[in-house]
Length: 192
Image (tube, rainbow, N blue to C red):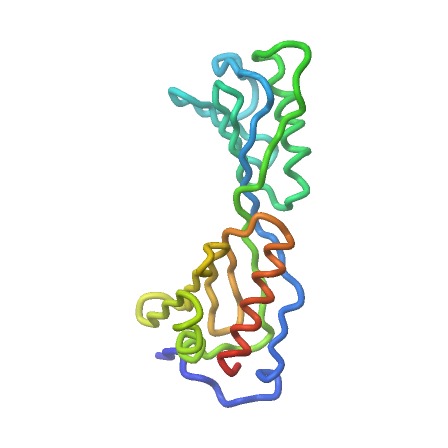
């Protein structure tokens, strides 16, 4: 059973380079700009609870509250948030509010991102290198990745031996880019 010992150095390992990342899911919260009568939501797949309704808007799962607050999950790109909010406001417009409605507003609460460092990573070395820099846990018998939490709370990441990284908690593409660069620097610091 492999427990994360470093493979023999290769030229590729000396050139850790994370150039591209992919956003896998986006979660957002906002307000459609008017109160919503939950009992009047019609059409499509809906799930009812006492204080909210869950509806499916395309592939986006939306929780709608009576005060107009909404939570959106399942978006695949940060640029989809505004369009999803406008479509949602149009669908809900018959349930409440007046004719002069404000523009629906939403903010991204979290993006999940994946990328590759382009080389295998010795997780023991990464764990040792990061012990005094940030919070890093590596328990090879319990989890196959090193779990990193940025001290400022900006992001969390799972770094796998293969060099693949799952990144959680960024709210913008620029935050994701900064986190990718930070993790790449930490991988270099660990001697990968």
